[in-house]
Length: 120
Ligand SMILES: [Mg+2]
Image 1: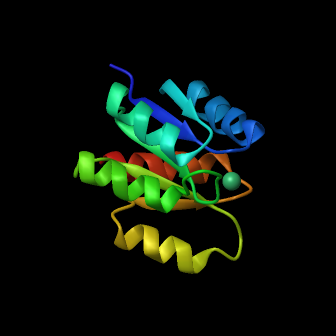
Image 2: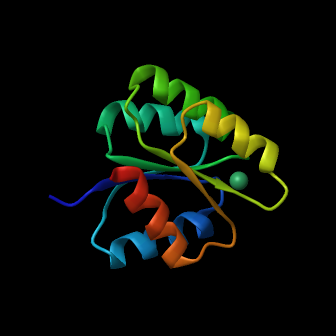
């Protein structure tokens, strides 16, 4: 069965870009969220195999959402999507259980490498 993925980013074009990379590589995108709270809610409904999580978002940021998801499911596979200059937040996220991180602008090869590594 195809790996199910929840894509989380407040920017619609970023979600579209990740979705495009994933669907071209046979992943099954089961949900999209535009903020951390939506991400937590959809995670609880769908239990996806993997989450790509933006850091800076309104309502609830990606690190808080990561922590809530990991509290709900300690085995959750979450990859953080960061921008340049967010190294400190990436370290926080890794300490909170994120499996890996990818840096914007995304390169398809790097996205797939991070995903495959986190699922291995
Ligand atoms: Mg953002």
